[in-house]
Length: 226
Image 1 (cartoon, rainbow, N blue to C red):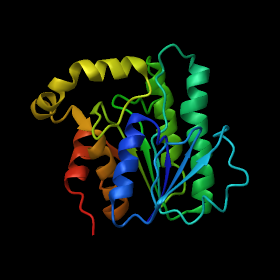
Image 2 (tube, rainbow, N blue to C red; image 1 turned 180 degrees about the vertical axis):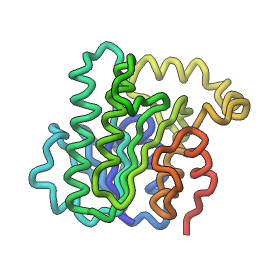
Image 3 (cartoon, rainbow, N blue to C red; image 1 turned 180 degrees about the horizontal axis):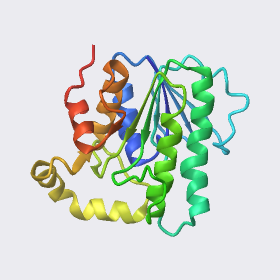
């Protein structure tokens, strides 16, 4: 299968990229982002794009795709709703619109968040915007679209957050993370589980379109490469 991946330089995206490159049934991975990943692999191609809301001239590169894993995201801390919506909603929907037009039989997986508000009317700004984004994606003409709602994510295999505060937090709590994952399996996921679950959905689908933490873990645990 051919995968296009957005947000590959972020913590989740790094883990998803690793699993895509390791999977024997993934033939090619196209990474689209504002900066390069620094990864070198025979399966990997990268497009560096300053404006991720405009894909004019990229139709050929974005055609023939079996799945999109959209891991691009930012923290809402210190941001206005308009700016957060521009990055979280507008960029996501712009990419999805192009991909659905070029590849109507593809699978689209979007990394949302636990607590997302699909009513779009709640008090929490990021949850409203994520909810609006989920609603828009679920109404697009993909063969399948899935919303991932992870909570706390443990980075594995060298994945690191781009946010300094999160890097410090993970460094301080690293000795406790395996224990927390075992003690609270319905609250903690790993970057590896995220990647495996996404690939499993492309291979075999899933009975739910919105996957909470336990659903993501279940999909990851059932993952098997051919």
